[in-house]
Length: 439
Image 1 (cartoon, rainbow, N blue to C red):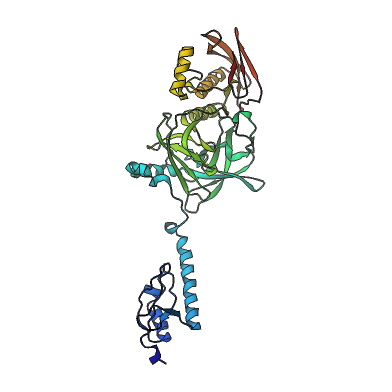
Image 2 (cartoon, rainbow, N blue to C red):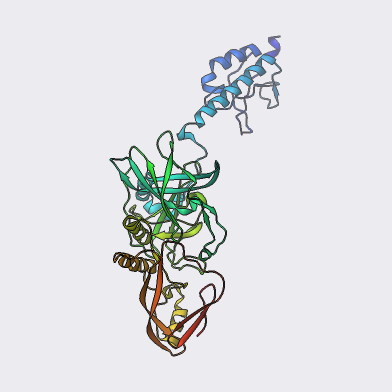
């Protein structure tokens, strides 16, 4: 029997290849068992190597393969496969070998010149970017990102800034001016921290604002990385990164440039735009520049973000008054600077104006007026008179009028319909999107 096996050789096949690989010769099936045992570490049972099927050739030099018909050999082969799978499962639990980590934009060829420096900036900023989740009656309502903006070393409490979309139970319309969104401030919110064990802790709501769509929470943490600084200097065309966390706490990174565009008729006046889309889990994350300074926060689905200049005023007002007051001006406005130059030139020829329709940093101006008014002892619900320059299409001239506006800490709403605005000898009729229909 042994003589009939003379010259037969095992040729194990590598997984995923069609070409056989030479192995040590064996004179009998029994010799195969001994050989596989001795060579387990280098050939058959290598830690990251799928075990080879035991095969033989009919004669030397022949590529016709045949599996050994030996139950003991088959059992040994199945045992090796089980060991391989168990080893693979253990290895995939190691963070260094995790195959499910998503890829970021940092492989983009356009970022190669700044990749090293930008990576350091991003990794530093990521230390304060966490994930948050909200629940109502034990059911997950939303997940979003957030970031630490303050840490009290004595009380071990961090303040987290995020989007109010985290506690928005009903987002019913793309038109933000309708004010139809519903919120659940009593929702249970958890913060998912970045320690080795990825600890989950309760997050207590401090304040939320429906108009600016921001929310503040406090979280107990033993230590905190360096809090990033804010920069109010945001310019069109500026390179930016948006940081966030996905549902598995993986860091998300998007790169783009601040877009030269203004809000649509359905969006709040304060928005600026990134040029890339942000999903639900990324909402609430910071927008940073190449120096790691915070330029804003993504607070809605899509490309919009609220700039730092508005965020800082909101935080100052909240610290000072316990709420964020705002003048309700009753109009939707658009900025001339975002129009095409051809359009601007035509307005200039016809109306002899080349700027306006919206004051610079409108939201900041309105909040500053509120702050000055409240500092005089007035409160929410009171009114203030402001002077506004108006270009009168009917006369081809400008005038200054006084508008009496209400101070509120709630969202400004435009119901659908027509609005009539009169000033001196001119009357304007506005539709529900703020378009000048008649003068």
